[in-house]
Every structure is written in C-alpha cells, then in structure tokens.
Image 1 (tube, rainbow, N blue to C red):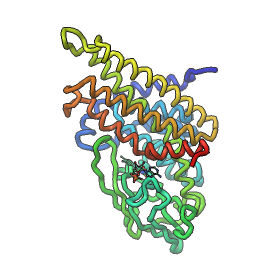
Image 2: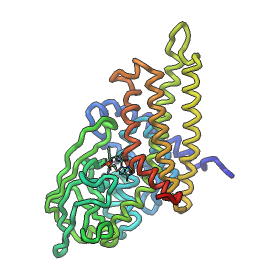
Image 3: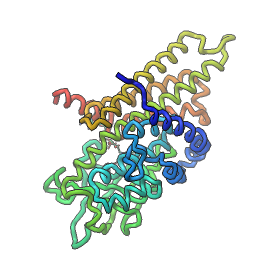
Image 4: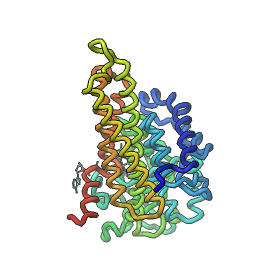
Length: 379
Ligand SMILES: Cc1cc2nc3c(=O)[nH]c(=O)nc-3n(C[C@H](O)[C@H](O)[C@H](O)COP(=O)(O)OP(=O)(O)OC[C@H]3O[C@@H](n4cnc5c(N)ncnc54)[C@H](O)[C@@H]3O)c2cc1C
C-alpha cells in the first residue's frame, strides 16, 4: 500500500501553501473585519489554475481530483476558514451539478468561466422552512412558454451576495414532492433576483446571503439536466462537498494547533514555558495525534471518491469526524491561550468562532449521524 501523495499532489500542496501565505494571509484581517470576501482571489486563483483543481483539464480544471480539492481547501483554511468557504463552494456545490449534468453549451457558458475565476458560483438549496429537511423547499418554477417563472427565498447561501450565478433548486411540480424538484442556473442579473448579506458569528470573510426570487424569468435552456431530477442532483453534489468540508476542518485544526504550539513555547509562567507543564504538553500531543489521524482518514476518503467508489457513508463519517476535530482543537487552543485567546485581536478566538460552523454546513452533524446509521442498516 502506498500512503504518499503523488508528486503532482505534493507540488500542488507546496504551491498552494506558498500562495496562501503570500497572497491570502495579508488579506485576512481586513476581510474579517469588514465581513467582505476578497473577490480578487477568484480570478487570481483561476489564472494560476488553482481555483478548481478537481475538475478535468478539458474544462480548464487542474485534473487533480478530490485529493487536489482537499489540498487547496485545507491549505486555505489553515490561513482563513472563511475565505476557504467561498472557494470550496466554487469548486464543488456551486458547480458540481453543472459538471455532472450540464449540456456542453451550459458548461462553456458557466462552468469554464467559474473554473477560470471569471464567474462566481453559489448553491441555493436551503430555505426558511427547509433546512435539514431540504425536500420541503417551497420555491417554485412555473413553465411559461420559453421561460420558467421562479418565486421563493433561499437563506444562508455562501457566495450569494457576490455570485454571478446560482444553481437553484425549485419545485416544478409540488404534487410530486422531491421528484418534482428541478435545478436551474439562475444568473445574478436576472430581473427579480435580489441578494442581501446575512451577518454571522464566524467565517466573517465568507459572503453569506438571502436570495429572493420574485417572478424571476429564467430561460428554459437554463434548466439543468431533466425536470424532476434536481433534488438528486443537489444531493449528489453534497457527497464530494462533505469531503472538502472535512479538509477545511483539518486545515482549521492545524492552524489552531500551530498557534498553540508556538504560544506554549513562548508563554512563561512559574518561571518556565507553559508547554513544559504536562497538562499543556498533553493537550498538544492529543491535538497532533488527532490531526494526523483525521488527515489520513480525509485523504483515504478523497482517494476512494476519486476511484469512482460510492462513498456516501465515508463522506458523512469524515465530515462528522473532522468537524469535531476542529471544534475540539479550537477549544483546546482557547484554553492554552487563556486570556490572550479571548481578546478580539487574537486569531484563536476566530478559529473558535469559525470551527463551530462545522456542525451545520453541508448537513448538520446529526444528519451525518443519521446517514451513517442508515448505511449501517439502522432506521
Ligand atoms: C454559514 C452558512 C453557510 C451556508 N451555506 C449554504 C449554501 O451555500 N447553500 C445552501 O443551500 N445552504 C447553506 N447553508 C445552510 C445549511 O446547509 C443549513 O443550515 C443546514 O442544512 C441545517 O439547516 P437549518 O439551519 O435549517 O437547521 P434545522 O434543519 O432546522 O436543524 C435544527 C436542529 O435540528 C436537528 N435536526 C433536524 N432534523 C433532524 C433529524 N431528522 N434528526 C435529528 N436531528 C435533526 C439538526 O441537526 C439541528 O441540530 C449554510 C448555512 C450556514 C450557517
């Protein structure tokens, strides 16, 4: 068995780490304080071919599969989890259904510009009355000649306020339940489409918004795949997204660990570095061990996915495991930094606020446990 990343993946990690430290780190303070995603990163990453490493080269992707996606997101999250969230959606939820079910024309019009960073993508599923129960969406799309008329509201949409298009789930036939849900590509400039920013506890630098569609006329050619298959398309995108989400949490845990290790070596109490106290040293030993275990699990699941294996259970497991990892690591980092961690200017309090989101996005922790239980033949 070969447990090493191949040369291409190793080189990609080195390039992304350099990019994240040189080009992303200097933007983080302002992006977090002003709660603004630094949109210039989309074309910058796109021009370098780093934005959507997982997609095939024929669509201008990096051809590096899910392992490539995970490397990108892990390294970005090590610098800023909020920024990594917007990039994660671009290479995954916001474009995956287009890649898997779009026509060649749709791919050339939306997917390729998204991969190049010329168009920003979003994924619109969640609504005020449909969160975990996503099949309960109330947004409708009524066919009228060569158009669909869309009405409804989506909430918590990552990249929503800055997107150029959204892959939107809407019901074309409410009597059919989830089998009446379809997916549409809706351009930001479509009359009747408005987006407003939603403020949050953490990941301040990611742009999250409410999207409202009022008699929004979308050309029929913007239907993705077949009518009535949209719920399946939206959900299948989530398996890959959960793996990328886990990568974000490994990167975040790593950042919390690195900050804590440095601090434990520098902070002197009772005449010695606090890292020399066993209570603190063991916290760091545990963090290092758990990050190592999570990282192995993450890249094993990414590899499984890249082999074309069905990995619904593993994707849920790794998302669940790595969310807990990041939350645990961020809490330990707060305890190691104590008062210094609680101050607004400390990066550690940002890790703590950002990590807790792990329980919610790409399906809550309880929903992951439900998926795993079902795969185990329970419920
Ligand atoms: C910052 C942020 C970014 C997001 N980005 C996007 C995005 O880009 N696109 C998008 O479509 N959505 C997005 N979401 C929405 C996210 O996917 C939902 O918040 C999530 O699915 C949970 O839905 P909810 O918040 O309505 O919680 P609810 O579904 O109301 O859940 C409330 C609680 O009940 C539990 N629960 C619910 N049902 C069950 C059950 N059957 N069994 C056990 N427990 C259950 C949940 O686990 C949770 O603890 C985002 C959310 C946030 C906060």
